[in-house]
Length: 161
Image (cartoon, rainbow, N blue to C red; front, side):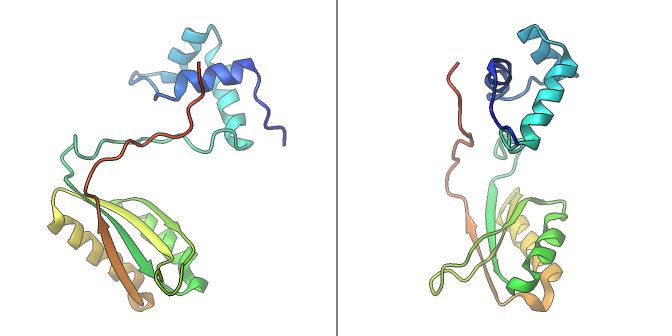
């Protein structure tokens, strides 16, 4: 696939990389700013996603600002032959914000399934971990949780304007 960006694609990426406007029709706002039709903006963004220029479009909430003070990356050691199926189940839990498979780094790091959870306090996160453990059942060989100790700015690559 052709993943080259033209000047219009680049302008769209620059216009969106700080986030979409919190308006009823954000793609129309981008189109107006760039003097384009909204349909063209949406079609170009779809194409850039399909070709991998844009990996994803998603919400990045500030969990602390909305009352979630405890954030934990849960890590699980489950059999490799079922990790994808189990990851899909865990990822469907409403409190899991992201879930993915990662390679083990034995012998120090046996974990291959990661799931991020957020709660108002550590008790909330502990209860969520128990629910994940129930979903994973007998497949869990070991697990741990890595609690956040500070807020890191979440940004991807930024193009210069």
